[in-house]
Image (cartoon, rainbow, N blue to C red; front, side, top):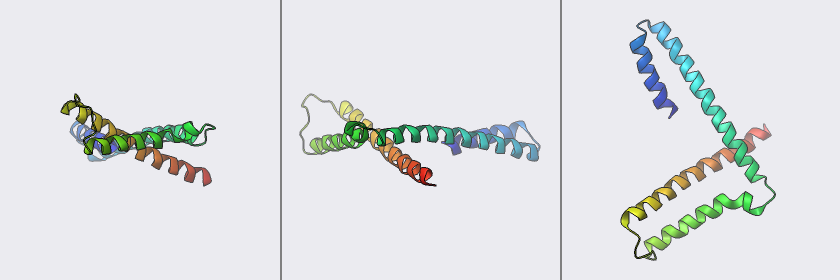
Length: 122
């Protein structure tokens, strides 16, 4: 995402500033700001995940894996034909899209959690 935004700003800067030195300086500033914003967002997400992982409650620590296992069970049930008869194809596809987003978030969350542990140890 940062790359796409950076490229977009880079094209605008190239058109607005014919001087290549000035354009490159501005693009470097934009890239630096985008990276700083992304880092702040990642640190915030890391803090949330770290708090969840170190929580006192079993449910607080494990709700993400339990949720994803539930979704995996729903997908298997769908493949086996164990779905509601009145569920339309559009509804089924919408539910599978939610599962895809959830899996993506889970993978990113686990990566951030591991990064947070490594960051704390260093």
